[in-house]
Length: 486
Image (cartoon, rainbow, N blue to C red; front, side, top):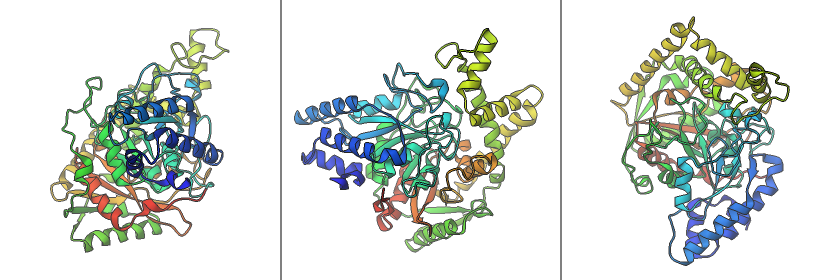
């Protein structure tokens, strides 16, 4: 039943409804698939086979009684290992949390449990979500299923690779500056970064609290809407959660309508690979031919997005990661002989080089001598970036751009050049700074056989429009039916 690995969650749900397969059988198939390909992909940090099968059995029992909880009841879902799940590891791919077990569920996990989903395991990432290649994990490097010598993107590379490789049909990730969209582009699947506040951050291990957002990965747009429907919603435990009305994404995404599509000149400047540029131009031509208005726009503060992002993000990261002190629940150095040693040596041993780099940079920009020159100024430019988008959305409904300036790069190619690695997010970080929704879908392949990502950026809480416009493209160019050979 190998074809099941690459079926959509929607199709699998129909099979469960028709009782042509049980959730236990389905879960066993995905568990076996994962065991088969994991030596090559290395997307999972841990699997809890017993728990997954127990929950699948409970799903089958509900279904036999006519008590199905929803369309993803009985469907396996992979979880990025920064999202708390009670009784499961929460390592954030860091040695400092190597033995930590979460004592509670994140809000999104509560939603998944209420929907009857089967959380199947913990997925790899760049340590504390700091990276664009999933090479910064303290445990293993995840490989791109399209070519094992290439990165899957990051930081949610484990989530993207697992869906791409048919290990799970759905997965959750987190996006602070592109960490859902960029790996989705690299792996040729769909990934959505929701509006800031649409999905609760309660139970998400914080990188940068004003930027982080949990979001879904799926093989196609319909599945993306299915999972978003489950995880979106207000949570009074998250002070930034918005009590917005949640529409029926599945119904709205299939509505045919014309959009005013903005093309920002700043996203097509130097540094965009020629094959990526051509694939995006082909997508623009598709929308033009199908009655959509194509409007050239400008987002003039885009050139400042990377420096602004890396000031604000590192400042917030240095503050958030101060809690890992070797005293309460993280790694404690056996070489420590006094209180100062506990703090300094435990953090030195527990954190990797990229995490240390960002903590140092963030502490520097927050220091009294540099606060006004860097952090305060960055926040002012962040406001300008938000204003750019607000002005653009006066004349357009959505904005179209590349997701990433290049296709996936080779493992090890940029790991020793942090600035080049940071530039991988040049098309994505502005959206987090502005708190807007954006999604990535595949729009073609390079000559080397690597996927190319197409990004749509929307108005706040207009995820339905993004899903709809992406669905129109997917119906004609169904790259979701392209599978890697592993």
